[in-house]
Amino acid sequence: MLPVSTFLIVGPTASGKSALALALAERVGGEVVNADAFQLYAGLDILSAKPAAAELARVPHHLYSVVPLTESCDAQRYHALALPVIEDIASRGRVPIVVGGSGLYLKALTHGLSPLPAASPALREHFKHLSAGEKIVWLLQRDPEAATTVNLRNPRYVERALEICLLTGRPQSGLRRSFVEKEPQVNGIVLNVDRETLYARINQRTRAMFEAGLIAEVAALGKLSPTAEKAIGIREIREHLAGRLTLDQAIDAIQQATRRYSKRQATWFRRERCFQTICLDSLPTTEYALTRILELFPCLRPSSQSVPSLST
Image 1 (cartoon, rainbow, N blue to C red):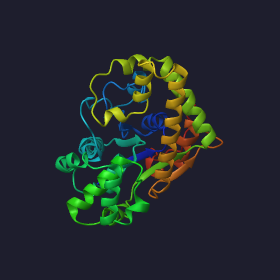
Image 2: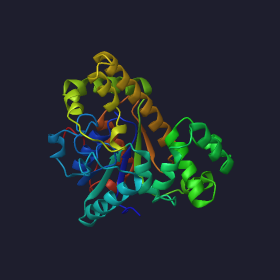
Image 3: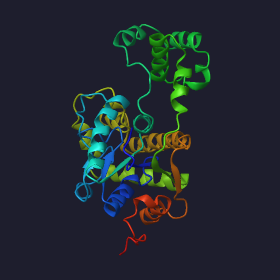
Image 4: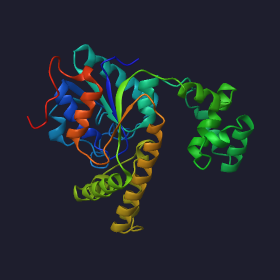
């Protein structure tokens, strides 16, 4: 269970979460804890849009660049990394501010770990000998509801759902539903940015990444774990380096993949009812969002003080 002083800032990529977490930490005496799956990795500074060194120095930041690129990470490992850090921050009278957009990692903190079995290497090896269609048929025989609850076009999702069915002897949809229906009591907000503004930010940020040296960063990467290699941009830039994509095609592909990812994130967080929503449609500024947070959560304000302006 999270310490009661923990505050969460979640939302889609490029919505301004990191800047807001930094501003809030400076205002309330907080420390920032990363909940972005790829910012955990060392060596993906540009690609994962980590805060700049100057920003990291302004307040303590935790769980950035702590996992080697050769190692896999999942919600269970993230929970084991993050919870002791959050508890330590709270024990020192500081405010743990968890920020990120990786839904499963955040859910591991807010809901606790899912009561689902760990991956089975033996089953994963067996799955290699089955076609995609065979795995889908096998899954639906054991869990007909998976036809509407699992993205059957994604082989990883199909394999994981089938694995749960086989290891537990029960339909995975029922097990997942009982976990999802928990309603934790947490303090936190989800940033909601109108699509046109968000997509423009994504497109601009992608180009800025290239200007900052993204191609060189990816070219220098060595062996990657199955988790690390899923970072948006690695495949596209490697295709460019191999001569199969032009630079403009690589940029367009990354922009498109990031926009799609942001849409999936927005859908995920709309289902998470434990968060207050702050809409940045007309006032997409850190100052506005910070003021709204302190209005919605007076427990964060310094005692006997009104909410000051960022300009003071």
